[in-house]
Amino acid sequence: MVEISDSLCSLFTAKIKEEDGTFVIEIPPSEIKHGALTVDETYRIALLDSSSEAESTSPQGPRHPAPQGTTSHDSSGPPVDEGEVRDVTIETVGDQGDGIAKVERGYVVIVPGAQPGDEPTVEIEQVQENVAFASIVDSDPRAL
Image 1 (tube, rainbow, N blue to C red):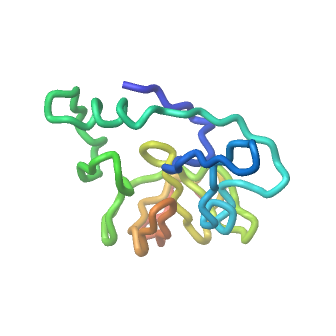
Image 2 (tube, one colour; image 1 turned 120 degrees about the vertical axis):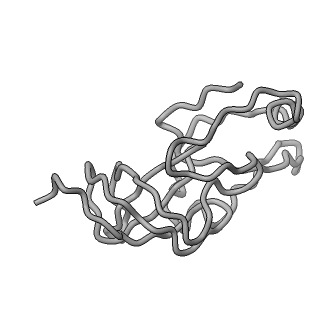
């Protein structure tokens, strides 16, 4: 199993293409649109062979239970479902002022009205391939 750093900004699948003698990895536009990555910034990129993904998701491979309050998802899709209620920790605030939490595999959940350090209970309202949008259903009792 591959360890994933807490500093992970983004996780997506892409093919390497050759263009004019250089090799290119295409970034999905949603990564820029939702603030996971910024144009003209430098990032470290880790590449995982697709065969290693197949091993970790095969019936013979190791299986780990989903964290409490979550549902079990395969590793090829988003780790959250619309309507799901879960506890998150807000790590930062995005360009639009919305709270940003990361859950399994570095998947981003946008939470309007939340601030870094908040630990609200949220309901997932919209799920996209690389990001979900949620609303607070129960505020962090420690928040003022």
